Image (tube, rainbow, N blue to C red; front, side):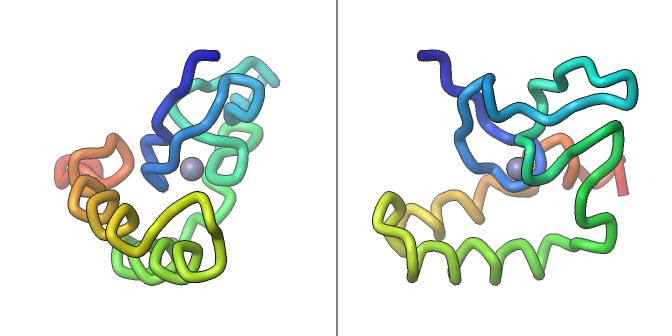
Length: 87
Ligand SMILES: [Zn+2]
């Protein structure tokens, strides 16, 4: 199955877990946990908080190692939500 990378949290997701636009159409830029009904679920989230969240997730989840989480964090500034021109 096709795997997408969420442009907010950097996490891989399948299209079935994609976010939704205001008109309920699918937004494949973001996962469902980040983007719902045309808005970010956690609007106040910043890059630093996201980094901490990812490291915490890596500690409890077996499908991602701490090293993988660090690699992910390095790439976060390249994602659509976090590019400088969007802030
Ligand atoms: Zn996401």
